[in-house]
Length: 239
Ligand code: SAM
Image 1 (cartoon, rainbow, N blue to C red):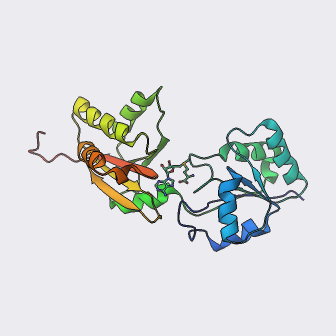
Image 2: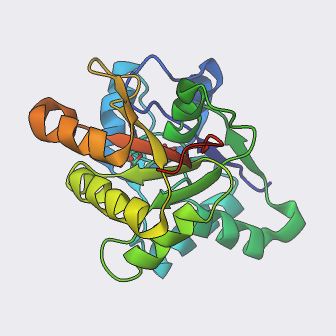
Image 3: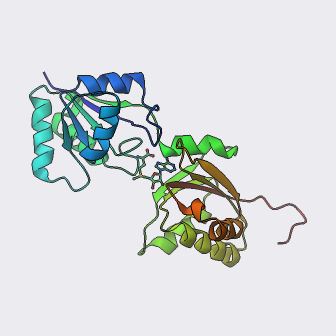
């Protein structure tokens, strides 16, 4: 009988954020496919889960894909995890799911186990209406970055992006320039180190947050999600 592929969300910082179901399935499957086996080992060791691990990431070659497909064909049950959060969300996963669906069509058995993602952890912290939002993941570092940034400003709903600590200051500077260029006011929420010891949220316009960042070196440490929206102009506000 064909094996099952489980896509398992894992914590984005706080190791307690693993569901009971994820814990059970990680212990029951034949193999855990990991973005980085060393990272996942820390989680598995914490929960004393002894299941074997194998690496599977964005650079995995056709041979590794075939090994995974053959393992499923021989009836093995597999789990796919990323370093943190939900596989497939700015992380490897989609290509494997596509390959399994292509090979086994309607016979494919794939389950996505819910859990942490920086997207869903960050959104409710804003207090903004986020029943509709846009997710842009990581912005390109160089080529295409400017046009993607302009695309952000065209959205009618709050936009969520992932940003690394190395580019946070640059992003704030770029957004401040775009505000002037397009005559808009942006409101931002920066959510830092979600679920971790030094979790913090910052609110303000790009310029305010850039100043804060230059004064507080700790603010640039860790992992970040940036949520932005255009501020509503009041009727007599010509700024
Ligand atoms: N698959 C993951 C998810 O579901 O959230 C995202 C993986 S992506 C490679 C990593 C990015 O997610 C980080 O650079 C950061 O922007 C965001 N992120 C992950 N963990 C975070 C945390 N604890 N606090 C804030 N942002 C986080």
